Image (cartoon, rainbow, N blue to C red; front, side, top):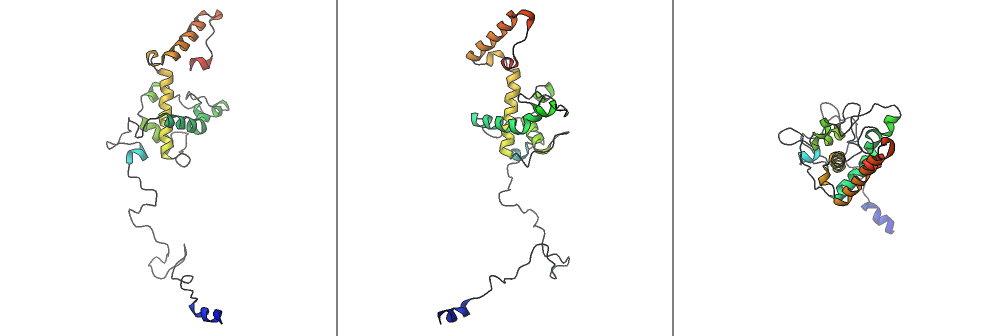
Length: 200
């Protein structure tokens, strides 16, 4: 008896509500398409990119920015190193010299990050290359989110500085190690060069 009394209360309005399925035909619109294009200016949830510099690396003047738009921290550089080693080093090498593992297997060698042309590029340029690709390098926008692209760009700057930093800017303890390696190289018989690890 209770079920019979409850039966009239069961309605199918929510289940049978007026709706159209994706790609279904509609007699309401002139083009007979039920799916409608989004209203102009529509932004998907979580996709509002109000900070143009952060998402493009390009400033108001239309040029690549020279300053990092995020805080430069040790955590950022460590993240950049991790992402660089994963996504960039197979071609560019761990030190950015363009001699990665793929190159050793016959792939075209990319330019070293340590040549003058790339050392003088603003940091926004590296962000853009990771975003859009360049030459034979495809875009990594789908694999690397913007925050990680800036981390990679910052780490590339650190790599460049590591190969071209003035000796007086090196911490004292590291300077002593460099001088020790230099003196050993100068005193070595046969003029053998120091190991690559020491030169880095």
